[in-house]
Length: 445
Ligand SMILES: [Zn+2]
Image 1 (cartoon, rainbow, N blue to C red):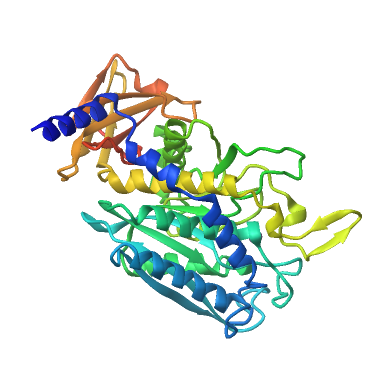
Image 2: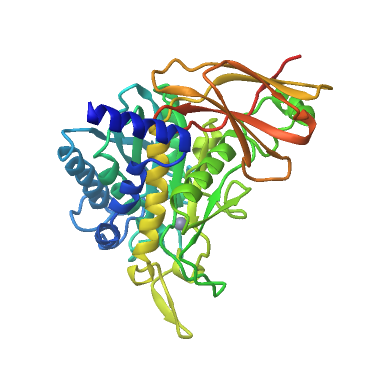
């Protein structure tokens, strides 16, 4: 009776406060910078992890690296009663596919799936990259430790699997090491294609690429700020959607942008010491990353990375020139910062995987009326507490206003004029976790 009361009170308080879940703090505290350091060292010590490098050696090259990553996922799985499905996903890329593929190569990704109990085919994904490069992108023999780019993202992904495998989730989580990034995003393309063929319902991809550098080439030292890159709208949008956008809005409200806002909010709530910086663009100016191939086929995906890069320490031959030490060596990686960004990923994977799915068929109305009307399709899930309407000034990057409206499939927001705000709706779970916000896709009168 006492435990029932206690748990009921805890549940009610979670709902009333509507924000924090103790498990999320436990996850943050469990992420280990020491284990991340060990894994970055192990990855750096493979000499080179260039996509075209040796695949036979047990100590050097990308073959040894991916076998080690798979064995780590296998070990994690053993410790959680085989909770991970670990496998290689591979594609042959032919010589001449672009200028950086100078011989036929099998691009191999290492995938670990932690299957959700309610939604085995709905996924939230965290990725890092296996491969590395030096100054000449086609040099596949020189030492290329790629400690920050991108052993840091890979180590973070393995550590997130270690921490989250101790929990069970409603939705599935994928931890993946992608290859072929530096040669032209081939691993991401391969896995995005594979996901389409398998009809995976991917809620979002969190691509981690360089999460360990705190000393920027701009002279700034900052272990708090990190960037979340997201494209404004999916490249797959139709002509009809494009035309509709002109009249009803949505140019800063694509699915990847909602994922970025979700991460921003979770971090502001649970890791107030961190400074998440949303950047309203696909990626750095003119440069690429492994979330893009997923965006290309219509999945939400964002890039998480340090705020201040150091270009003397990425894609460089290891050397000293004019007193500057070039090269992506482990000495430059800040493991505590990498652990913080790993925790950023882990708590968002957990929140999304614990939340009910978002409502669908979200419609909005209220033209020339003093109120805004909403209709949506409810989610059939025992964890549903209800739905929350979010809105914000059209110039605001974050969902600043919200109203919980209960377990209903329509609502009228009185006294709010539709013209002056942007709106969205999220599902709220009894466990306090919320889905991503859905921007209305249809209008009704
Ligand atoms: Zn790179």
